[in-house]
Figure (tube, rainbow, N blue to C red):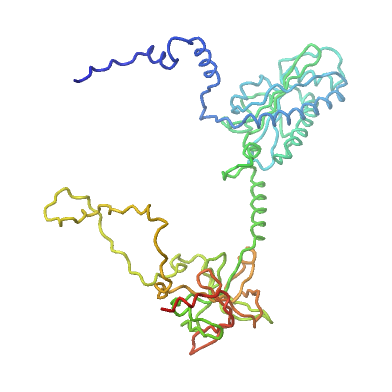
Length: 471
C-alpha cells in the first residue's frame, strides 16, 4: 500500500519543532533573542582585527598616554583638566574624517618608514580654544569661535600636539618602533590625505573635562603600521610580512644571520657499492673487499644526508680533507637518486572502462582494471614460523665507506665552491668506517688494487651470524 503524500510543514510547524513544542515558548524566545543579540554581520570590506585580548592591551597602553598628557597639561596650564579614555575603535579613514568638526584643528603626524602614510591628532573646537586660552594666561571661560585657528594659535596648540605625539611613540615603542613627528596642520578634514580613504585606522577617543565644559581629543593611526601588534601570538602561523620596510629588512637580516650560524653535518664517503650477504657473512679482520670503484672516481660530500658536492680526498697537515670538484646543488634531482638495481620498469597500459559483455572472456579471469581479491590475513598476523636466515643470504646490501666527517655552518657551506677545501675530523692515519645500510659494520683502511679502490678490514664492529651459512 502506497502511503499518501506528506503535506509540507508550515513555518509555524517548524517554529514549534525548534522550540520543543508549545510549552516553554517564552523562555525559548528569550534565549533566542539573547543569542541573536550576540550575532553580528561580518563586514568583508572592513574586517575587524582588534580582538578582545588586544583591545584590553590597547586600553592599558592608551590609559598610560592619557595619564601622562593629563599630568603635563595640569603643570603647564595651571588649571584642572580631567582626561578619560572613551574608546578605541577600528574605522576606515573616511569614517574618521566624517567624525571631525569643520573647521577642525587637526595635526598631521609623520610616521617614519611608513610609505608616506600619516597619522592625525585632532582637537575639537571647545578643547582647542580652552588650551589656547590657558596657554596664553587666560583664566575665564574660553570663547569658542567658528573659524580656522590663526598661525599664533596653531603654534600654541602645536606644543600640546607635540607632547601627545611624544607619549604616543613611547607607548608603542615596545610593540612597534614608531618614530613620529608633527608634520603639518589642516583645518578642512575633507582635504586631509593622511592615507587612502578606505584604509582601516585605529582611532582612540579621549574625553576632556575642564570646568563646566567638555572637549574631545582623537588620535588616528593607520592600522597597518601597527599590524605586528595584532599578529604577534605564541601560536602564530606564517603570514605576509608586516611592519615598515626598514623593520622587514632588519628582521630578514637578523634571520639570515641566525641561519648562517646554524650547523649541519658533512660526511665524505666513497660512492656506494653493493655486496651479497653471503660474502658479507664471511668478513673478518684482515679481509680485503674489492669495491670495483676506479681510483679516479670522485668522492661524495653529503650535507644533511644528501649528496651536494663531488670532492677529491687529500689532507691538510695531519688531518684528512676534501677539495670540491663539482657542486651538485641546483642540478637535476635524477643525479641525486641512486639508480634502481635488479628491477625492470613496470608495464604502462592505458586504462579502459570495465566491459559488461562476457563474450570471449576467459572463465574465472578478472575483467580488465578490476581490483584483485585479497585474502584476510588478520588471523595469521602473529602466527607462522621464522624464515631461515640462509634463505636471504643471496640478496645484496648497500655498502658505504666513510672517509671522515665535519660540522660546518650554513655560512661556511655557502662559501664552498670549486677548489674549496674542507678539513675533516680524522687524522690521515685513522681507520675509516664501513657501513652496511645504516649499520657500522667494520673499521679498516682504503687500499688500491688494480687501479680500483679496495678496503682492508682491521676490526669487525658488529658481529654477523656466520653460523647461518651452515646447512
